[in-house]
Length: 329
Ligand SMILES: Nc1ncnc2c1ncn2[C@@H]1O[C@H](COP(=O)(O)OP(=O)(O)OP(=O)(O)O)[C@@H](O)[C@H]1O
Ligand SMILES: [Mg+2]
Image 1 (tube, protein in one colour):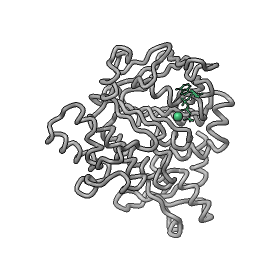
Image 2 (cartoon, helix red, strand yellow; image 1 turned 90 degrees about the vertical axis):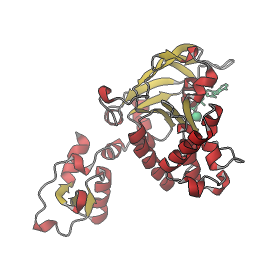
Image 3 (cartoon, protein in one colour; image 1 turned 120 degrees about the vertical axis):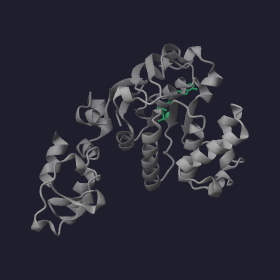
């Protein structure tokens, strides 16, 4: 999802953590210690680390739900210290694990929260709510009048995202937004969010303690260790290939080779011509990941898969050996 700076989206803003410290009063050690990193405009940065490593604290300092005790955070070049905290919070989308919807308000009213506070005209608010609910796949006619309890967990989470997007904020903060979902729903909502992000290109800081989620969602991953210190900040494939130290290596796991395969797609490889003998091979679309291809080969006991292009055209075959080489590259 990285992009050429010249095509950086209008409205998305760079976020800079500049030697940020948060020491809670009475605590033996800071929750966040000397954190410096830059999130380019329009990218998704995942803060990854074990429980207590300061991820939530780092996130909450961006919209000043927590005040830094040292250093500075700048959004689009402006220090958050110079912004009014209430206005700052209105200008930033915030999604938390339980979606945090108001239980006694309808879905439409929940999504309208910030536009109402900002005093938008009724018609404009209504149109925005309809547009956003459509964007997250919950048409207003069907879902707008329901209450949060009448939705599934995944649907509630999508409403949380729609609500966070309501005033078109340049920045979104997401704190384990999909943590409460079952694995299948989570994967689905992750895919939806990535597709949405491709269209709207906000700058997103996304907290997770799940390396698979981080690799999938992040343009960059910041690994934090106990005491809120930055262990490594890199693109997912670099993190998996070259963990900075033993802590990061342990955190990304022994199967990081497999995880790297999940970052590559069959379309990234040069397929071999499909001969007559390829007729019985299992087949995958070109967008399938190499990890999926490997699983299929193992499950079917073959050492090749056939690759299907758009419009069901056959592109050729990819071998186990080619997958292995790509994973090692
Ligand atoms: N309001 C607070 N007052 C004092 N200490 C706090 C406060 N909030 C968090 N802490 C401490 O700061 C440290 C970092 O907490 P934080 O919530 O940022 O961690 P986290 O990485 O988000 O963890 P988790 O994965 O469990 O959500 C912890 O040691 C925590 O106990
Ligand atoms: Mg947390």
